[in-house]
Length: 173
Image (cartoon, rainbow, N blue to C red; front, side, top):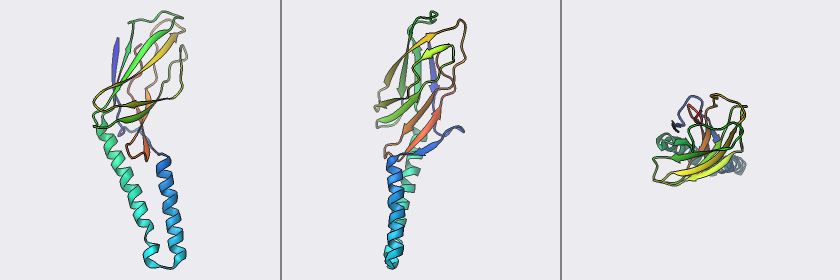
């Protein structure tokens, strides 16, 4: 039993959040602006423009790269049906189209009637090859279950931002 999902950073529900590198560059930009203003030197007063341009260009580059990444996940179960109260193995295989490795954080949400470890996991997906993540789900109620969309966020190569994504479906029923 298998399910394929395409995750895109350009979805309406996607969010880009700054990482520590971007925050450090923003603080450096503010400090350069303050020092330049206090110095009285007109050339030094405009030096912070360079740091700001670097930050904005880096964020634009990451956004463009994440749109091209084409992050995909294939979710498969070892058996087509799970037995009530018994753990079932799920395998998530992540792939992308870029020529470099991507760092992905995955948060799995399950229905209240299925026990699954909901901790956030970090996975490095190498270029050209997929990377797998194994999960164990234990059904606590009979019948088909409605799963929440898969939540993931991808770190851009410069390390300036996370691009949040949401899959259209979750795990096989």
